[in-house]
Every structure is written in C-alpha cells, then in structure tokens.
Length: 309
Image 1: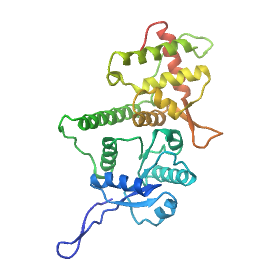
Image 2 (image 1 turned 90 degrees about the horizontal axis):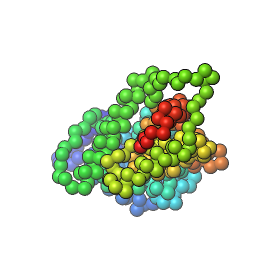
Image 3 (image 1 turned 180 degrees about the horizontal axis):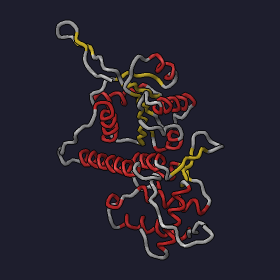
C-alpha cells in the first residue's frame, strides 16, 4: 500500500495516508492508544468495539487495526471483533495489534493466533513502540536500529529487538527442516518400538533447578522460554494435566508478551498444538505435538540421571 501526502492549495495539506483503526471499549482507552500510535508517526481513526465490525466493512482503506482491551472487558462484542480481526489477518487483509491486561490472556489468545497479529500483555511504552515498528517494517520494508542513549527505554528496546531477531532466526531454521522443529534422532534399540517412559519427578527436578538459578543470577542471563515451555508441557502430559495459555506463559519465565510470541512460533512449527476448551470458548489449552513429546521423552531417556538444566 502506497503511503503519501495529497497536496492542496497554498500551505494547506491533507494527510492522505490510510489510517490505523483504533477500537476500544471506552473513549479514554481509545484516546490513550491513539496518542501512542500518532506519536509514532501514524494516522488514526477511532471507533467503539460495539459495532466495530460494521464500521470496518465501510472503511475504504486501512493499514491495520489496534484493539485496546481494558480489564474486565471480555464481552460478546469484543469476542466477535477479535475473531473477525483474526480471520482478516489470516487472509492477509488487516494486520492487527491487541493490547490486553494479564487477566485476559486466555480470553484474548483463544481468538488471536494468526500471522500478522501481535498480542501485547500489559504493554509498556517501549513494547507499544516496538509493535508499531514491527508493523512499519511489514509495510515499509526493513528498518534500522540506532544505538541511542543507554537509558532503560533504550535497553528495553534492544531486548525486544534481540527477542524478535531470535524468533525470526528460529523460524528460518525450522522452515528448512524436513519435519519442522524436530531433528532426526537415532531411535534407541527397542524391538517393540515403544515410546520411552519419562519420570515426572526427573522433569520437575530440572524445572526446580532452572528456577533456583534466579535466586543467584539475573533471570535474563538464562532466559530460554522454548525449553522452559517444553519442560512444563512434558510434565503436564505425564501428570495428565491440561495447560491453558496463561499457565504456560508463567512457566516460560519471561514477560507474557514474549511468551505468547514463542507459543505462536512453536505452534506454527509443529512443536505445540492448540486444543479448544470444550467448556469455555474463551480458553485454549496448549499441549506437546506427538513428535515433540517423543523427542522430549527420548531426551530424558538418554540423559538418564545426569543433571540437565
């Protein structure tokens, strides 16, 4: 989509860029979200969540949709808008960013899982700016990151940049594997072809050891959300427990927005699978895909009693 300016008489100009539409349940939330977006250099147009789908049908052109969700706001109109936006993103028609509180992780993630969507949980200003920067890269092409002042915001932006780069590298690597996300592993000698058993206690010990490090070192030194989530899901599988998205985000030991990005990456590449809760339409469970489960069990069978954290 071409972004430009239409010039009229004298010094008067009209901003002819297509806007980012901002939908929220209250005027205050819409105003706050629009301010962040406009400060990042975008044009906005606001609309309430109720009736938003009809309003989107009348919109001549839009760069994307920003949905600002407030605590406790999980009504039917929001559910319908999230489902509609997800379908539009799946079709490649409307990139969507959703900002939501931690209390609504399950409700929102149950409906937002398409490519070209970003789900931000309790986002700080830098995370909002980073989301818009990623949206801009998708429209305008590659952007450059400059090493600015060493203040907390700059460090946070660098962390986000590193995180996105790491996920992108993972996606690129996985996309070249014959079976995404899984390497060819030598099958242990087993004439019956049985799946190796894994000890729930062994898995729990590894998880406890990983958490223990946080008492002595900065957690960011050892952040490995993919492995932490694989361990948590294996432990749940052995115990025959179901794991909702919100619980898996906690197990990842990183900010919820980061954990959600990794869940999407692991799901897209065949390591995790989503299963709808038959009793609650606002919740999905995450579980290991069969291939990932087998790989994890073989790993623990081969590692034996060795300490692996």
